[in-house]
Structures are given as C-alpha cells and as structure tokens.
Length: 322
Image 1 (cartoon, rainbow, N blue to C red):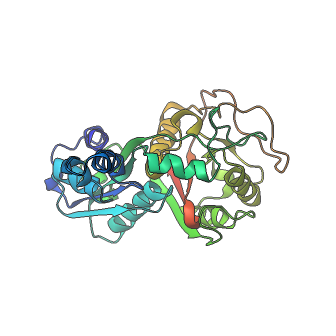
Image 2: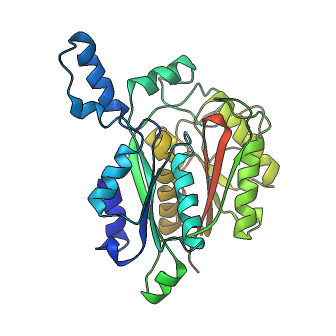
C-alpha cells in the first residue's frame, strides 16, 4: 500500500476517480507469510490460530486491499507468473491503455519471504548463503528478498492534455515462453532471446541503441548462463549490464517492478549500479558485468529482463524522454 501510494504521489495524482484508473498487481506467494503463522499455532492447538491471518492467503487478497485503499474501482486484476509477474503487469497495463480500455494503470507487485519459498529454493539447491554472485564463475545460487514496487502508466493523451512530465517512456516490451522446464531456463536461452527480440521490435530500436541492461541475473548457475547466451546472440557487442539483485535480493513477483524503478533511476541519475560480489568471468561467456559505479552516463534506453519459473520470460525497454 505504501509503495502504491508513493507511485501516485510521485505522479502528482490526488484522486484516481478523475480518470479510468486500473490496478494490476503481481505476487507469487500472496499472504502465505501470514497463513504459515496461522497453521503453526493451529497444528499445536486446534482451538488456536487467528482467522485474520489465513483470510489473507489468496493471491488476489493484497491486490484487492491495495485497490480499496487507493479507491481504484475501474479495473482490478492480479498476475502470478513467478519471477516475471510484475514485469507482466507493466506489459498488460500498457496494452490496456493502448487498446483504449483504461486511461491510467497502476502496475507493479509485492512479495514476502515465506518458509515455503525458502524451503522450496533450498530443495532446488539454488540458495547461496554467502550472498548471490550474479554472472560470476563461482556463483552458487540466489539470495531471497522481499519488497514492493509500483509505477503509474498514463496515456500520451493525458500527458499532453495535462502538460505532465513523465519520468520515462515505456517504448518496448515482450513476453515469451520456451516451455523447457518447470524451474530451469533453456540452455540456449531461447525464451530470453525471444522476449528481448519482441521488445526491440515493438520499440523500433536497434540492438545498438540499448545503453544499459538490467539483467535478470539471479546468481544461479542455470539462469545466468542461459541469459548470458541469449545476450550474446542478440547484441554485438553486449551493452553495459549488471544485476541489481546483489543489492535487493530476488524479490520474486516484485522483481520486475523493482528493477523497472531502478532502470528509471539509472536514466534519471545518469549512473549505472555495479554488479556486486563479482570476481571471476564465466568460462562459457565472453561478457563481463559492470563492477564499478559508473556516473555521468548518457543513458537513453534501458532494457530490463525478468524471467520466471515455467519458462515465462519478459523484457521491458524504458527510454529517456526526448
């Protein structure tokens, strides 16, 4: 709720009822963090356990609560496509505006760390207790994070009529599913390649126009290799890139929106955040991430990747307003 309110305040919006405003929120675990507390008490004592904890379990519960808090009634929906979830809310929101079904969309996601999530990733043996090392030869897994991020999308018509000054423009986006494996990315990066290709095609940009890539970069052996292969297939040379999950942890359903916000900050502040904890190049790839803070950078177009379980891959392109 706090993040969504901050987004509206940043956009200078006091009342959502003045336009056809929708909310699309993403999550992977819903209110499982609270229902876990309920079951812990209930299993010990069947006459205990607070019902207020378990009623939050449904994936759409947080979305409905945020919509009520903001006063959004025109259109409310939830997306849960694993780690690409909130990137997909941005894409879906943009499509609804383009199709004339809404004037303004609040998009993003929220996720909490739960025992279920922690145990699940631990079972897959892809948690790195040292902290994640994206795109490093000695990477051993991800670091879980939690958080929320939201953005406000508005039509060009509103921007022109109300003389607004947007932070950035969503110029391209693409989604693809390689259907390779339930939890692993295809070794040849097919899904990532298709998602980035679609985003570039929609934006009418060339691969050489991209100045920085906020990679998905989870720090897992499979993901980083798959994404790296896809990057080398599309870009020659590969632009400056880094993973900011070494700062935030992997925020799962919120990751796409969190990193869209970071991508916009990159454009605004003319700076690129370094890839932390990197020391050794991957032997399969020629590319290396940015490892030092870069300032005074002319960044016009940022490509941001978000890839999820089940092969759901999404790419956003955010651009500086000219």
